[in-house]
Image (tube, rainbow over all chains, first blue to last red; front, side, top):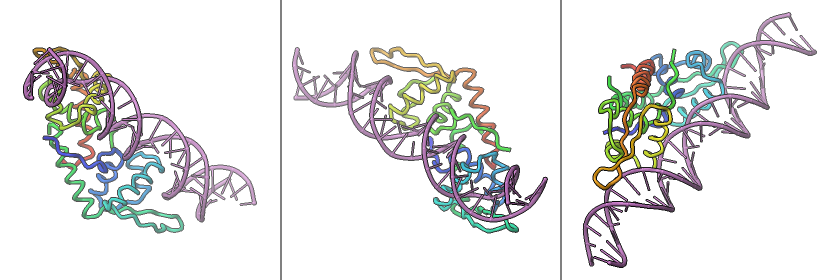
Length: 94
Length: 94
DNA sequence: TAAATTTGGTTTATATTGTAAACATGTTTA
DNA sequence: TAAACATGTTTACAATATAAACCAAATTTA
């Protein structure tokens, strides 16, 4: 049977963000933007959704004088990501 | 870098359908419905989209006296599915 | 055999989602 | 100080997914 895929993670950009954070734990907005190639607007929206779900935390600070938004994956986010990966395996010949 | 995911395949139900067809080549509507747990309406719509993309062919006939719609994956569909699977690998720790 | 039910879908309406464009706020550079 | 750049956010629109309603033919039941 096909397990349900977490709709929050089944999104190209959110999945890319979570994939990065699952790897490096923490990253700032600019880094995520460069790595994913997303537009700022789209990234901002998707980060909000991940944060609202408790999958990441978002901290706003400054690097020098410039604003800097740092995203960090939470344990729940890590778990959700791993769950998604496992679920996907039932859809794919791996 | 994160490769673009084929939006036609990045859909839970369409992916499930393609996953089945990649395995068994051909299956009828009822079988797909049972395996995926989808509603008829949703399945009907998603099958149309896969067919419109040339990923599957749809043949309408009868099994005994009852109508029977058979879906078959095309070579292009097979290729697209494999491309999607490969692209996904860059998103997941596998 | 007439009515009710089941099978096998399609169409349509709505809710959700994704995305880009426009905007806001401040900083650096010429 | 004016123009260009950095770092995001908000908003408006387009695309998508999904369920609900519908349809027609076949089958079962009374």
